[in-house]
Length: 225
Image (cartoon, rainbow, N blue to C red; front, top):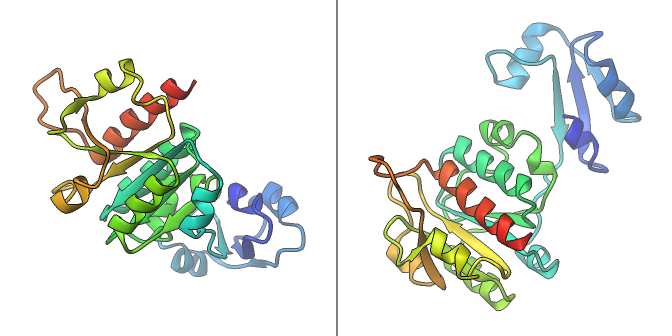
C-alpha cells in the first residue's frame, strides 16, 4: 500500500476500517479514502486476515520496448510461471538484486493476481514489469537489445559457479526461468545464449523456482558489482 502511494497516480481509491492506518491516510492526500466495515473489507481483500485497508490501483506494467529502451543490466524473464507465489517472489528478488525489470510471458500468471501482488511485497511498484504472450519473441527482443540470455536449466552445459568465475555474468544479462513443474520447453531453451545449471552439492534433486531465481539473480548482481 505504501509503495503504491509512492507511484504518482497509481492509487485510485482507498477503502479502510475507520481509524486504521492514519499514516497512510496522511500519505494519500487527495486520493478518495472510504471508510468501510469489516465484512465489506473482507469481501474486498480476499484474504483470511486483511490488514484493514484496500487500495484500488491502476495497472503499472510497461511495454517490453520501453523496458529494453532503458538499457537494463539485469532482467528476469518468467516463461509459463503459473504459481502466483513464485511469480511474485521472482519480482521481489529481481527488485532486491537491483534488476532493471521483469517480464512475465507465455502462460504466466497474471501480475495482478492477489497472491502475486502480495508475494512481491511491494516490489511490483518498484521496477518495470512487462507482460507478453510470445516467449520466443521476448527472448529475441532482449538479445537484439544487447542482453545475453541465460536459461536456468538443471541440465545446462554451464555451471553457475563457472559462469561467475569466467566472467559470463559480468555483462548485461537476462535470466530465463521456466514453469515450476516441467521447466523450460526445448524450443524456448534453445533460443537462449547459454543454459546454466545451479550446482547441487547435497541430495536434493532440484530447487524451487523462486529459490533458483534468487540464486541466479544474486550471482549476476555480485558480478555487476
